[in-house]
Amino acid sequence: MMAPGRRNLITDVEGLRVGNANDAGLNSGVTAILCDGGATAAVQVLGGAPGTRETDLLEPHNTVETVNGLVLSGGSAFGLDSAGGAQAYLREAGVGFEVGPHRIPIVPAAILFDLINGGEKDWGLYPPYRELGYQAAVNASEDFAIGSEGAGMGALTATFKGGLGSASFITAGGHTVGALVAVNPMGSATIGETGHFWAAPFEFGDEFGGLGMPAPLPADASELRIKFRDMQRGGANTTIAVIATDAKLSKSETKRLAISAHAGFARAIWPSHTPFDGDLVFGLATAASGRTPSPDAFLDLSAAAASTMSRAIARGVYAATADPRDMMPVWATRTA
Image (cartoon, rainbow, N blue to C red):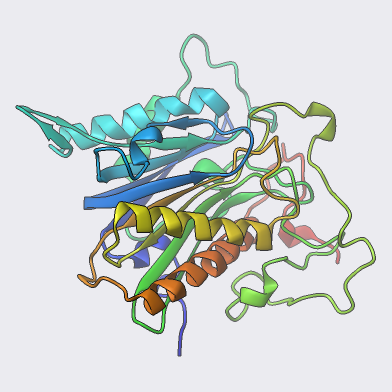
């Protein structure tokens, strides 16, 4: 029977470790994904307001095939400094792309907007994200916390507090797929005014509450709930994610996996991919299984990428914890 991996985290994909670093005063944080031995990487951006570092090199026609890590960060454009911190950690460890006597760690990054979430953002001349990126890399492990952690610490949705989510799945062909996502969309992960998740059809057990779909659907299910509609501007929101597998994939196939995972956004967030979200998915293939999937098996991987991403999004909102400064309620305090 197909099921989640042992941890139900992206780290069920062999070769990956994840670390979080939080700044409670800032109400923001960083999540670092380290690829032990490197991983084939790609990216697909479908939101209209992305904030990124080193994503051009991930295109299939460009030279570098593998990355040493990825960083997801709060802080809007200021958070891009976090990748420098993770890169410093990897350089200390002697990890990176070899150029003569030098090793250059390849660490693409993406950010979300959490500047208006009740945290103190008067940090002085330089933002603290470089140090947070370094600490997140130091903290990297196969076990890590989700919810109000790392890049999801200060995240919000249109109806509930957002968060950091993760999930995994083992396909019929024996490949592991894992998703990691910082959920901070303009839209909502829940249906109407209820606590039912749009991702409910893909849920295993009660991994995000076990409520299923409401029956009948509420009359307001299709109404748009838009976070901060009066503050629409570039970089104002964003759901940023990683989809990973232990399959052996080319750079082009890894990009196709990232494209497929965006369907998980569309099944878990209404609306997604707006002009004011920077919605983005990084793809990773560690090749730890040593097996290249057949065309049929790759179709299964692509479907699993979408369903696992949907589950990870719901789990991020479900696991969020309350803070006195919250601008949105946490899911656990819902009344419906």
